Length: 156
Image 1 (cartoon, rainbow, N blue to C red):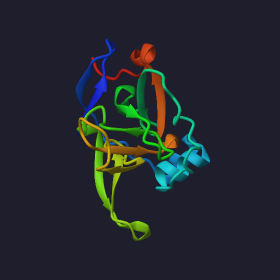
Image 2: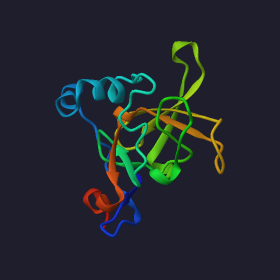
Image 3: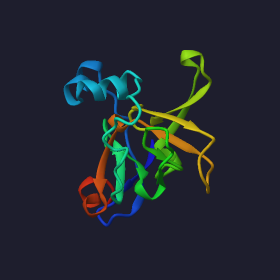
Image 4: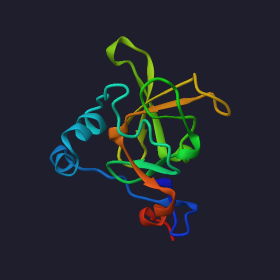
């Protein structure tokens, strides 16, 4: 599958990457119980409680399960909803969408394209330029400051 990752020079580059597939037992060994509940069991953290909600540092938000770059601080905004919100992903190839009709609602779920980590949902009430609000659980993300992006590099 094709995804976008960061090179050692900090540039976003296309990479042919295998899907990351693990058993539930394997995921439970590498994630905290709360991360597993949200990222693998499709849970939702309580609003205004996530550790990345008030993060205002420059950097990149990656998948907590497989490390795929998902969102940049450049697209983060305060939506007032209680969850980290972004108006676009790092690249559209890195985030996939699925119809979600659970709990009697009609929503669009967002997942990591490489490992199917549940991120949250996307709504059409965001700011310009996209009009989208990617509403994401902090437990599904890991933050890497801008000056450390080379440490998460996968490309050449």
